[in-house]
Length: 131
Image 1 (cartoon, rainbow, N blue to C red):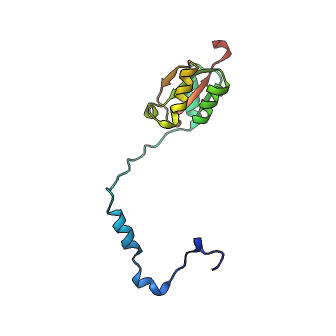
Image 2 (cartoon, one colour):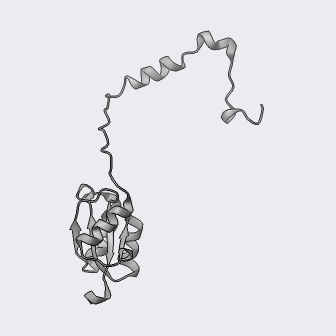
Image 3 (tube, rainbow, N blue to C red):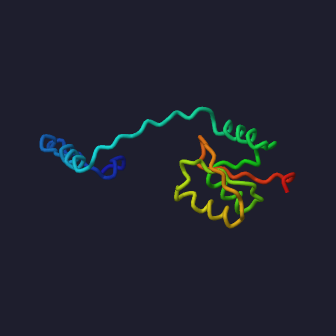
């Protein structure tokens, strides 16, 4: 077998007429209900634009106090002095954000359900003037 053969697959051209691969796949597909994918809405702008809008909305002078995304929001809660956590309402029940909600409650950090376009959540660091 040659090195460039895909996953060791072998093509037998002489068996092409007896190939039932597509019929097999079709028979499996018929066992499932058809699904339709909802059309994804085009998200306008960039993530940085959303962060700048958040800074304006919450009167935050430095965008570096806004940490978008699950990982960054988690770090805010674990290693920084958090002011609040923003969670997009559509992810309110998301399992992947459960730890954020728990950490925020443990640290008495308010959670605000806020419409986010580019992120599931954002952590906001408390500004020194807020302490």
